[in-house]
Image (cartoon, rainbow, N blue to C red; front, side, top):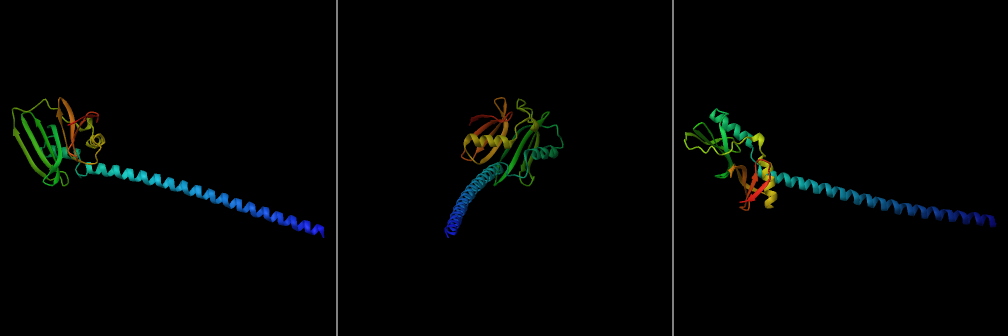
Amino acid sequence: MYKRRGIKLTALLLSGLVFLTACSNGKTNQSETTKETVVEQNTETRQETKVEETKQTETTNNQATASKVDINRAVEIFHDTFSDKAINITQIDYDRDNGRYTYEIEGWKDNQEYKIEIDAETEEILKKESEMDDDIDRDKIVIELDKITSPEKAIEEALKQANATKIEGWELDTENGVLVYDIDVEDGKNVVISADDGAFIKFD
């Protein structure tokens, strides 16, 4: 009789112990699951933030270089139009003209001066002229695209310096004996960037 009661009591105690262990494991598993969920959520949030930052950077870059025609293609069109790749290019402007962005390129060879305006979306030649000029400014630095900072890099630095997100246009020209990008930032502040190394020079 006493043995059976002892056995029953032992069985009850063991059952209780198993139940408590199961509850404890359940709480532990639930806690671990909660931690995993939080980690996953934090990871997803960081990933989403990075994606948004990347999109913002891409948007900024797209605003700066939204045209289908890049600077290399514009120079190629310039040389093809005048059928002479030996023309020295000394100035390139990228700006909005009558509601559309255009490239204006100037150069010279011998005593001949060349100018062209190209639609930055369609490659249409809007203006072109070539004329003799005995007073060509030969002190201007000849632009060699493979040896200078790209417009994209210069724009990125200009936007950073001006704490802005958009530009209106830019000019690549010689200033005080140095080849520079003069970038017109959206708020009207011009930022001068070295075309040699992409470094900030000044606000203009």
